Length: 192
Image (cartoon, rainbow, N blue to C red; front, side, top):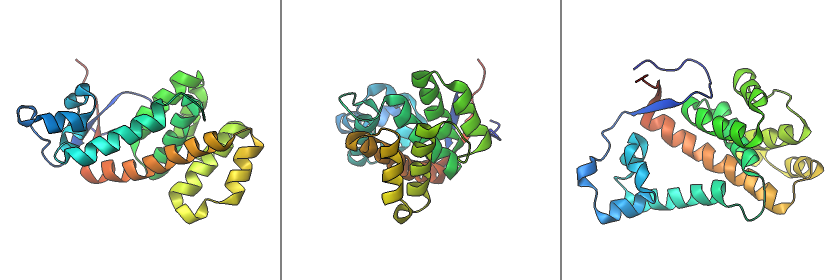
């Protein structure tokens, strides 16, 4: 399958370099680790299912960061933090997934396209710029993130829970990008 050569919001495939766990070898412990049975259709999650306890912890953390609606940052901006981090790290696959979610929840697809095309220095608006800048600072080197980033986030209206969500989205995807980039590669999805 051909590889994508640029960042995109298109649906992509992901091809592992190691063999995923075959579906017929899944035990109840593996299913528990997958958390969501539909993830058994993903080569990435089936590869990670080789260590079901770690996969379960990873997936529950991911779900809490992105799907917990009780307070904090709106979903679109959690996804923006993940998309910006993935763009910086060169993870075309993760950037495509989180850019689509950021576009869907924000209805700002053109701005998300600009982030993907022009990079993390693009001027979007003060709030999104602060979220992107904080995500980039944390991703480049955690000690590069600090008081100035917190002040910039506060200046655009983020409270403590929203700031925590931005940090969690960026930090989780800084780690997830490195895992995904070391285990496989993106591919253009085959048209059926």
